[in-house]
Amino acid sequence: MPPKAAPVVIDLKFNPDEVKAALADAFPGRDVVNRADPAQAGRDLAQARYAVVWKSQPDLFARAPNLAAVFSGGAGVDHVLTLPGLPDVPLVRFVDPTLTTRMSEWVALQCLLHLRQHGRYAEQAQRGAWAELPQPEARDLTVGVMGLGVLGQDAARKLQTLGFTVTGWSRRKKTLNGIETYDESGLDAFLARTDILVGLLPLTAETRGLYDATLFAKLSRKGPFGAPVFINAGRGGSQVEADIIAALRSGGLHGASLDVFSTEPLEADSPLWTLPNCIVTPHAAAASDVKALFRQVEAQIERHEAGLPFEHLVDRTAGY
Amino acid sequence: MPPKAAPVVIDLKFNPDEVKAALADAFPGRDVVNRADPAQAGRDLAQARYAVVWKSQPDLFARAPNLAAVFSGGAGVDHVLTLPGLPDVPLVRFVDPTLTTRMSEWVALQCLLHLRQHGRYAEQAQRGAWAELPQPEARDLTVGVMGLGVLGQDAARKLQTLGFTVTGWSRRKKTLNGIETYDESGLDAFLARTDILVGLLPLTAETRGLYDATLFAKLSRKGPFGAPVFINAGRGGSQVEADIIAALRSGGLHGASLDVFSTEPLEADSPLWTLPNCIVTPHAAAASDVKALFRQVEAQIERHEAGLPFEHLVDRTAGY
Figure 1 (spheres, each protein chain N blue to C red):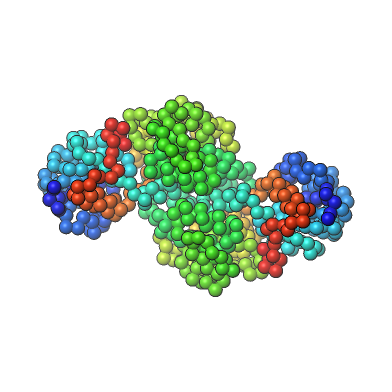
Figure 2 (figure 1 turned 180 degrees about the vertical axis):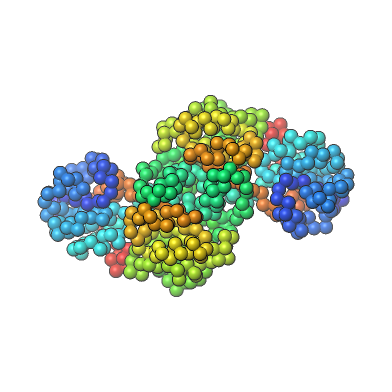
């Protein structure tokens, strides 16, 4: 057993003030090193047993060689898996009702924005034009959710409650009550009936560059808008932005909502910012609540020190 | 018993092409007079037993004196109650899952737009500005739904599923599972905790001009945006538009979403169209599906002719 108050190192590229404020009440009785605090930059990390990381400084694992576990500061772990010198210790993802709820808020908002033609109504409002548009119902559109982890399942259920026809896809078959699901072998069938594609996949070797012109061409064109909508809140590395831009311009896509980008921040001169019916948010769909993150890490450490296994362990081979 | 195929008169200020198309399959074996069809303008209405109406021509009841029932083409009936010569026969409202679902889509969209600060993100996007805003969660905002009929109850439940804290108000106390409700005597207490007010009230003597500066001043200012949001998809006659404009300008209201107006169409030069954080839609939140309307009227006529009472009868004293 490690000592009861084994030190924790915090290496989070989050808002530094929020991290500092959250640390005031976190990890009682335990030594904490916050690498984002310049005053603590030189501190020795040799005794640290736990690390909480998000886009960490590259020397973390060289300076902290005695870690017993690494906690991701978010739902995704691609940023951890690529860190130099990642030790062979349990890697734990952040699963939090707050994060899940926020993600579903964003996904539901984007689906409703496209369904209810908010962009066209906003444009009409600028001209003071009172004109009702032909309006399909939610059930007339099939939303296909790619990625059926905690986030995808919650979004799928909420979209279903709102009235959308919802299907789901995951690499390995998952069963959801009342929602038709597809696995790897059913990808083309899944895409062929999808009017709104919601991407909530992790970034892995298989998903890098997945959302490209070839995939968009497989989506349904039979829906009420005549062309599909692409929504991505997973990882920017999974999308080919040049193909999204071209498809929005050619009508191959009816619209898009993007919260993630291959390079973040998105360049100020990217056409994505201002293309009609393309909605851009700055990786803000589901920001981690730092206080909730620390509470969860505390609880996980308690489990571990009581001899219980960690929850939400990452499968390094699968990459998520 | 009336004759099996008693004639129906249709007097709907809807899209004439949609009405005509829907009538092609409606009321089989029954004589139908469509007053929106110029070719039928002169037809005798003396034998008509049923009328389906929405903002009808003023001479309807003078020309059709033998009606056994009047069906509203929408959920609201204020437009029927004010028609000259309304006979003392059963008045039936249109209650339809389609209409309910569409209304809840619109209400959920508007609540999410304000919660997720869509207007500010859209403005940032125009400048290519990547900047995350402090973001409350749905549960941090209390949505107060005024009007707990079929529409209000459905909207309340869906908002709750999305994570909002939801309360409800109706003139007469209603009980909803898991949702705190208030009645007439609890109006001020209800308003005092409401961060987003959703108006789904019918237009009656009591609700005319209800949403005014005095009411807005009673709403909560303790929410994450420091001022309340007003959303109305009930009737425009219930709101004082000058007070909404003044409150949006002074910060008394953080935002608004309006689908209904005291005069429709809203004048092209109304400041409401372009005020920041004010969203205007052209009475399009929940358009009646004409085919569904005719199917429901057919079913109600069948009930009536089989000796059963009508469903969804209007209480004329209450005004809804």
